[in-house]
Amino acid sequence: MLHINLICLGKLKESYWREAEAEYLKRLGAFAKIKIIELKEESFDEKDTPEKIKAKEAEKILKSVPENSYIIILDSKGKNFSSEQLAGQLASNLTIQQFNSLTVIIGGPLGLHESIIKIANLKLSLSSLTFTHQMARIILWEQLYRSFMISTGRKYHY
Image (cartoon, rainbow, N blue to C red; front, top):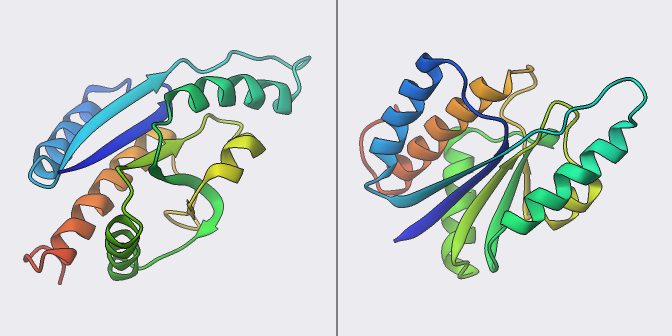
C-alpha cells in the first residue's frame, strides 16, 4: 500500500478544518497509509530576513522527508493540472519510478527555501488564486482522493 506523508508548517486550528481533513483521511485510507508531520512555524519580525526564516524551516522539513519518496511541493509558481492530469501524473510517477512513498510539503507564510524547492519531483500549484494554508491542505486531500478515484475508475469525478 502506498504511504503518503504530509509535511507542513503549522496546524489546523479550527475544528471545521480538522473535521474536513478527517473525512478525507478516512476516504484516502482505502488507497494509502497517511502520516501527517506538523512542524512548528518559525516566529519572525521585521529584523529577520525571509531567507533566514525559510532556511530554519527547511532544516526541520529536510529531517522529516523519507528516503526514496516522490516529493511534491505546493508552490504558487508550480504547475497547474486538471484533476485528470494530476491523477495521470501521480499514477505514472508512483508506479513507473518505484518510489516507496509520496511526500507533499506545504511551507509557511514566507514560502519554501530553495533547498526544498530543489529536491521536489513536482512543483504543484492548486490554483492561480491564493488560499490559506489550512484551506490548501483540505483542497490537497480532496484532489489526492479524486486522483485515486480517477485512477481506479471509480465514480466520483464526472
